[in-house]
Image: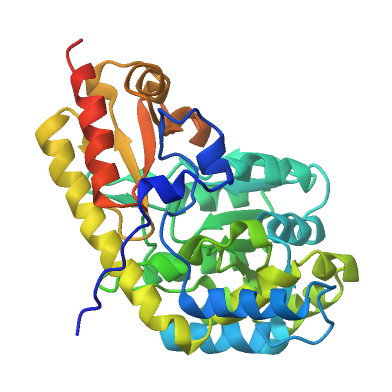
Length: 386
C-alpha cells in the first residue's frame, strides 16, 4: 500500500526557524537553495530529543552507543544490505568523515577523482585532506547521467589514488546502477585505488529506482570502498551533527578503528540520539510518507516548469529533493540564480558552484509544500522574454 504523503509546515511557522535556510535572505525571498526540508520531524525523533532535554541528557557521546546496530538494521530493512556493525564508527558529519578517511588513504599532493557537476564542498574536502582534485565529469546520456567509467579508469591509470563518489548523485538526483558501481570497484582495485562513497541521500531514493550501496555492489567494492552517510538529509538533522563511516573489509575497518578518538567524540549527543530514532523501525512510516510527498513534488515541478518556463530542461530526479534545472536556453547567463534572486526574489543554488558543468543551471530544493513550489515558479515565470 502506498504511504500517505506527509505535509510541510506552513510558511508562517517556517519563518520562525533560525537555520541557514530561513536566515540567509530577507523575508520577501523564498529560500529554495540549501538542502534543508520544511517538514515536521519524525515523531520518534521528537520524542527522543524531548526525553533527553527533560532529563538533561546533554553530555558527551558515550564510547558505546546503539548507533552502529541501528544503522545496520536500517540498511538491512531499506536496502537489503547487512553491514557489520563492527565496521561502523561515527563522527560529526559526512564532510568530516570524508576528510578523515581521505587523509589516511592518500598521500599529500595525490589526486582524487570527483565527478562534476557535484556537491560543491567536494572540491574543498579533497584540498582539506591534502589532495588535488581530478575532474572526470558525469556522462550525459541525453536522458540521464552516468559515471564516465572510461574517464575514471584513465585518471586512476594516470596516478589518481582515490575516487570521491556521490551515490546517489547531488545535484542531479541520479542513482548509480549496481552494474556501474561494480565496474567502478573493479577499476579501482585494478589500479590499487580507494573509493569513498558519500551516501547521505540514500534514504531518499524513490522505491521504483532502487538503491545499491557501494560496499554492497560486489566483493571488490567491499575491498576497495568506504561509505559515509547520515540521517541528516532525509530526516532534516544537519544541525545536530552525527554521521557514520562504514568499512566492509578488515583492512578498512582497521583504518576506521585507527582514527583518533576525537573524530568520534565530535559526534553530537543530540545528533546521535536523533539518528538512532531516525534509523529505528518507528520512523519507517514517516520516511515512506516523506518519499510519497517528494514524489508528488518532483512531478508537480515538472508540470509547472513545462507550463511557465518551457525553455527549462528538467529531468525528474530518482532520489532526493533537489532538482537540477538547465536554464541555458533562456539566455540568463552562466549563473541564472543570480538574476532569479535579484528580480524574482527566489533563492536557488548557483549552478557554477557545482563545477563548470553547472553553467546555465540552478539547483532548486523541492523539499517543501506544493504551494511554495507553485509560488516560486510563478515568481520566476515573468522573467521569460524580459
